[in-house]
Length: 458
Image (cartoon, rainbow, N blue to C red; front, side):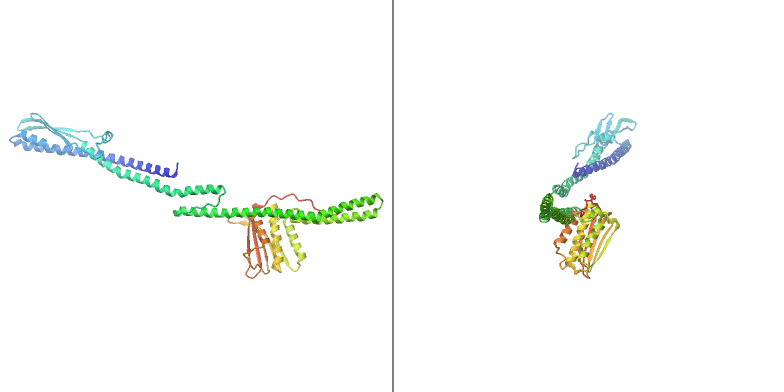
């Protein structure tokens, strides 16, 4: 059942209950009122007859006086008077009419007032003139009560009809935006985030509309960002594949060809019993293998931070710092890693290494710092009740000249952080330098992979 139908049904039930209670109260009052009126009419009528008989004791023509007595009751609404004896006279009340028609039988039965009769003998100067019969007639009084009861029903009936009409019309208009919201939510569920709800609404619905529009806007932005990241991911994959193919072609393939040539030459020298010349070609093969090992290690380092799988996050970060310490020993490097961050998992560990790698490279190459601090901590987010890994990298260099414009390196860091559900912030302290802060939910950590076989040199 719809909300509109429920409200209409609630109003109808409330009205019927109110009418039932009012009818019970009206029934009690009506029945008591009719009975009281009939008793009063009968008492007054009897008193009138007795007073008239007393006056007629000395009348010259008592018969005419008795007829006049009966005729005086023609305007009475509640009594039927009959004179029986030598003279017969009847006075019946006029049956009144109502704009609502006669009182229904069930209402008369509900009132339950039956006619009551009393007889007054008429004896004048020792002569019996018959009997005056007084009988109550509750018809007119019951009809009056019925009119009052019907009048009392008109106002609640009109009120109920108007209330139902107002609920049907205005509630329908009020709920119409909710129907639009339901359609809009279906569009959002189907991936169409461009829909917006507009129009003038009640304050409560206006808040709901504004919240939906903000949600749709953020979903649109998130969808656009996801599309851009997917395109960027595909581009990066192709670039990495191209670089690996170029390295294999330029660095590994020629040495494999040289190894093949040296091996064939050494084989021929051995067949003709010239071991000295064969040994020279064997040494060339060894040098070629060493060179390929270095190239393969270099390619694996690009694909996976060195030391992450074998020794954990601390070793991998220290290798990155050592790389720049050998090249820029004039810079003071400070590294602080929380013990809880030693094994962050496969995906999160790789992301942390890449962030530190790019941030170090950016600071050394562009910031000209004297001191770089790398801090990796793990704490609890009080709002979300979740643990976060926080990376803070600061330097005392010259900072960013245009904080609003990010280079390709920082854009790449932001994309990596966003991809695992994290947040990245940049700032330039008042005293100079540059600060990078990245926060990752620990839920973004994946299961660590098995460590690859280590390449060793012969």
